[in-house]
Image 1 (cartoon, rainbow, N blue to C red):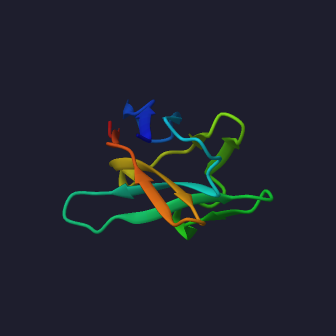
Image 2 (cartoon, rainbow, N blue to C red; image 1 turned 90 degrees about the horizontal axis):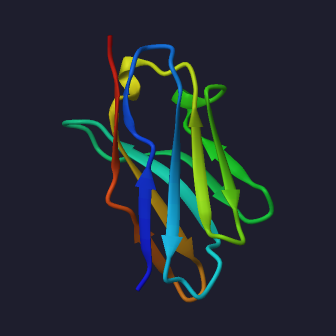
Amino acid sequence: QVQLEESGGGLVQPGGSLRLTCVSSGSKFRFDSMAWYRQAPGKERELVASSRSLESTNYADSVKGRFTISRDRVRNTVYLQMNSLKPEDTAVYYCNAKIWVPSKEYWGQGTQVSVSL
């Protein structure tokens, strides 16, 4: 059974940095894409950053220039380096992984990121 486990969340002051890690286990295949989503209280879950095969990355406009997604494709692990954090970045951050053929999608349990004085 495929499992994704996030770590690295916590409480940080505005302007600070955090690095999230998502480690997978149980997959016999390399993921075609891995991504980070977040969900703030009272809001819908939104895409933060994604990484597909062939080094293609995509970022939400709100995090461009501040967040960087990276992957270890051999280990099916994904990271999110978050710099210059703002209070509006406060949310539960979820790891997502997809295999395109056959179509499979997996989610982690989430890790809380709180940005506050």
